Image (cartoon, rainbow, N blue to C red; front, side, top):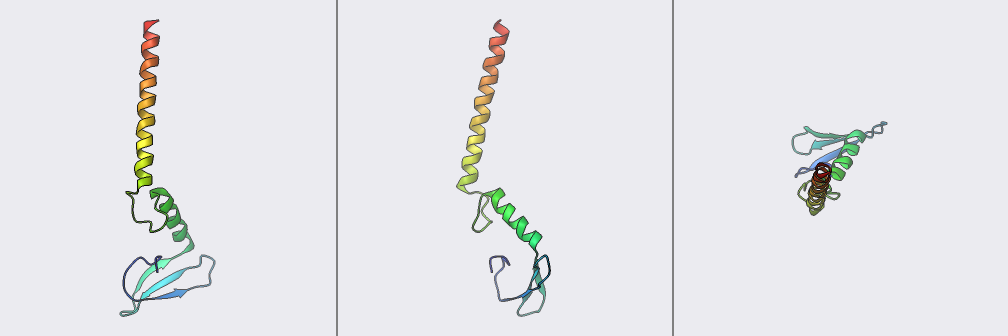
Length: 93
């Protein structure tokens, strides 16, 4: 499953508690490999929004990030230019 995020055979055990915990147990060794709770799922969703990769939540160099960073740099340069113009016009007076 995508929520598990690792290769290999795994068993999923769902608990009917309030936090809807899921345990992922390795099918060959029986070790608990991951625990996913409601809090983890919320964090994973927020992480996907943060890095702007809504499908796999792994690519933090997406074109969305590059476009947003480019716009931020352009706005900064425009604001810096306007601030310089404002200061020089105030000094001329």
